[in-house]
Length: 172
Image 1 (tube, rainbow, N blue to C red):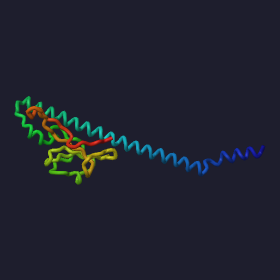
Image 2 (cartoon, rainbow, N blue to C red):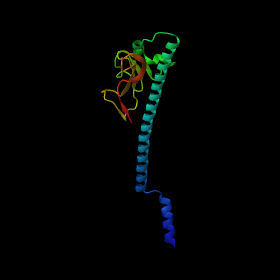
Image 3 (cartoon, rainbow, N blue to C red):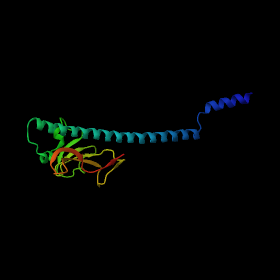
Image 4 (cartoon, one colour):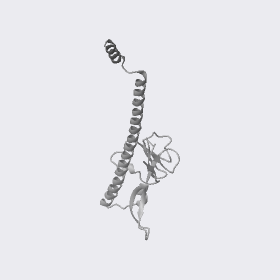
């Protein structure tokens, strides 16, 4: 009887063994790694959603700008409008807008930046998270848009403008 009580007392007082502690720490480490991986994935998905929201704002601003010119009875110079900086059509620039540059400024700007490339008349976004991004272009991960003229196929008359991708990409 006395043996049983001392064995029970010893088992209660010892706590975790070294093996149990190591297994517990390994499991916590694996769960933390999975959590961090998911967190990075969702941060990148959120960045993509914010970028697409900003682009939709630019598209809407283009329509409003053209409508405003028509309402004021001004002539529409499609070539000039296609070369304009789309940020000028907004009330305020997007977060991370760095200004206008002549040529590719992606090497000198931080990730998560917007800028307008005057030489190519392109609006450019430099990705902050690019693990799931694929693009045919070399260099830093970026997405580029250009204002293009919409033409009637039969006689190539310009009937409007649209903000379109300058280069296809795959993100997720």
